[in-house]
Length: 287
Image (tube, rainbow, N blue to C red; front, side, top):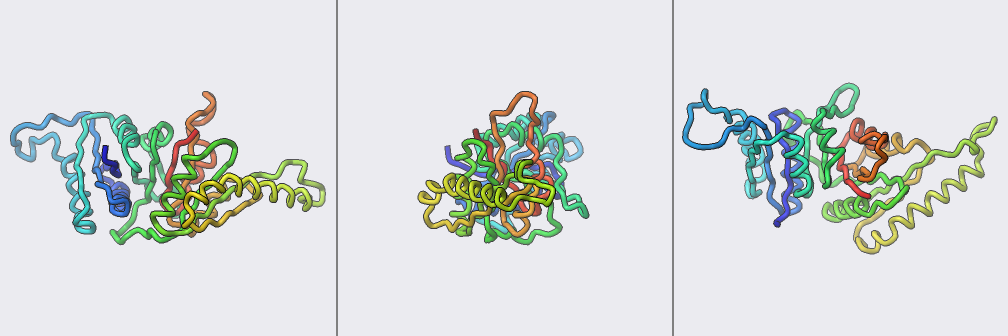
């Protein structure tokens, strides 16, 4: 099956922004773009109907509007318009397993500068089998910057090969530096009455640096042309990943597919990233 990028459309400004980002991504990858709109009440096609009697008028208009906007910017990009008579979550989850990646829009809640992600987006992120990218709404159709560094947040608590590979591959295609950020909290024993024990803090930092370097070693050899900047911080991982995304073109974060039954669908680091990072966020499921 030939790969493609899929964007979920719902007629909102944020989904149009997502469509433009997805078009730019599909163009860079050299693959078609699928414009997907899912509505469970979609009527079967057949015959000509007056606009006022066409149950599918608005779904068709949503997809057509996005298609026209993209065609103006990327006239040679192959587009596939897809109206699906399914619940949106199920249709998007199926698309996520087939696409590279699935792209969704997310509202910018200024002045809080945070994403607003509805139930559909949360359900898709929590269950997606493939990478999903969240894109903020934009007030214009200017090109997205694709020359900014790619930042990947790594916990190193377990295997994360799929996450690291996606980050390296994206940086390689864009010809930019990959910033690998790892952060961990200092243990309680590092805090004394006089503040943080400098010796323990230094030893913990060195250990974290060794762990990060080792995790990236084989991938750095595989993607030898990708410059890598390793960043270690002794602070809250959620705070660190958002701070380091401030000047980046794309933030890549992971979601573990094997979670405890009582654990939240989306961890606190991922939640911070998708709600507060100022750039597009790629969420990559991994073991």
